Length: 119
Image 1 (cartoon, rainbow, N blue to C red):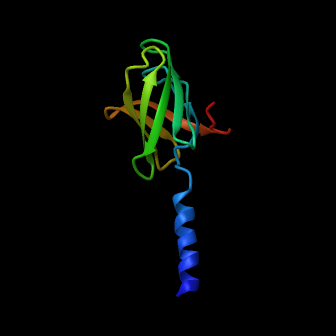
Image 2: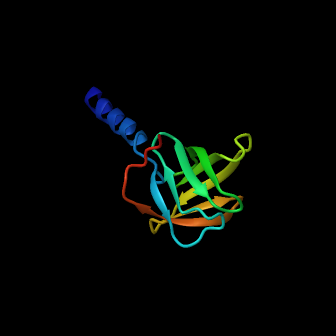
């Protein structure tokens, strides 16, 4: 029994440490309603993107997994660090992703190469 429990525990712990499918560098596919060209979702729970509409701002976010394919992003714009807005980032079956706010799609994205680290 002991020989079974140790490998089973290892597999469970290893599975819990796998990265969220949303982690990565994502490039906008077409025009987004906020003028977002790309979004970086880092492994350590941070995300960042820039918008040009309605005003130019850099958005600094903390994210948490809301499901297997979805992450909630709690973001503050550089133009008003006291304001916080929530977005949802969902990786779809076809490998593309959608950024939503209040269930409205504001942009579609495709994954690009690169290390999604935020400094």
